[in-house]
Length: 197
Ligand SMILES: [Zn+2]
Image (spheres, rainbow, N blue to C red):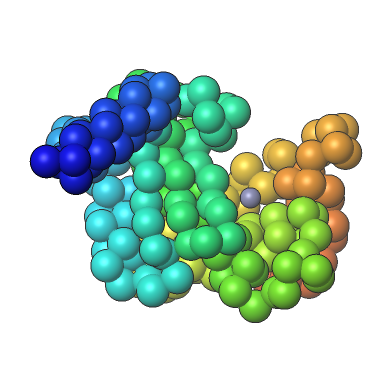
């Protein structure tokens, strides 16, 4: 009896803690929201579904609404957790269409790769962002090779735009300022020019 009482208390405490995280969305609700988003974001939903079961670096995908992610559609943590702000799917934003969200998704997975190959003491925010952007280019180029150039073109466009920002506090900006001067970025531009019209 005492055991049941303790379990009930623990469950109550867990529920109370969960209730204090109103931004997180439970798995069933997230699945249903993703289903509803398929018409507007078909590629993003398809890629997300595929990688959730095929990329072993992804241990968990969490869904939430805006506040925790601080204005970013997604984030990644070293434990293999990808956080997605579902409000970007519920309320489509002009700069974050289906193609851009694909770029964001692969950017976050790029972080997971960086965390995997870089020991914690060697990690640096700018290098992590650079690795993430480069991974998104690698993966969207693979999509281009299979016939869909738009994610690659979208990624290249927004990387160039963001590289012009003066916000040097932002490691994304610092990474991009360097990247857009490097041969790797020019190779992707050249590929897009030759194959993507
Ligand atoms: Zn990043």
